[in-house]
Amino acid sequence: MNVYGGVLKRNGTFIEYTKSLINQLNAHYTEQPHFMVDVFTRTTYTIHYYDSIILFEKRVMVKPSSKKTGQFIFKFDSTKKTYFERIKVDFLTKFIRKLQSYKIKGFFINEMIRLSGKGEDYF
Image 1 (cartoon, rainbow, N blue to C red):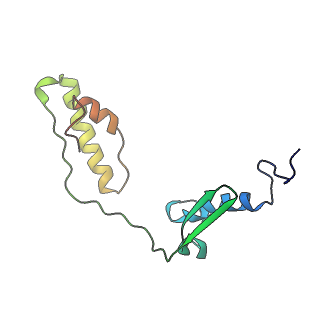
Image 2 (cartoon, helix red, strand yellow):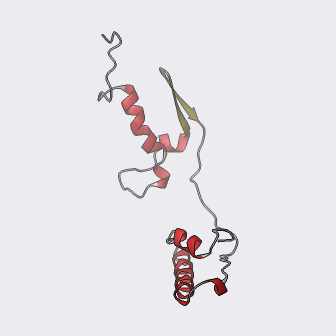
Image 3 (cartoon, rainbow, N blue to C red):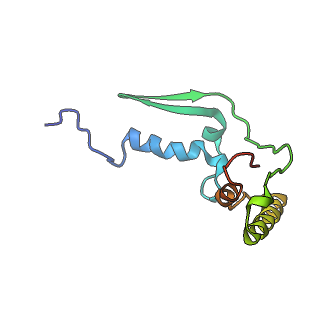
């Protein structure tokens, strides 16, 4: 018999309410329109869950940003690849550069690593 009344995922409990705050904490990173940055997002650094304790670490938060620096480099030994693989690497390299110019995350990274041989000296 449970003397404390605990039930897994019971609606209306404080623990279930705080689980929804995890998404709100990360509202800066979503493109979903129903997650707007609010006071909680701007003033909460992290949420910690412990046995019977939930800790909200508060501090003034600024909107996160990212900065890409350096150059796109892909070292490729064309003497060890077939003609088709050389064409594929050339196409993928140009395609990834174009995506980066539009600030779109790169695709085909695993394929570029595979084609590079050992998987080292990439990007």
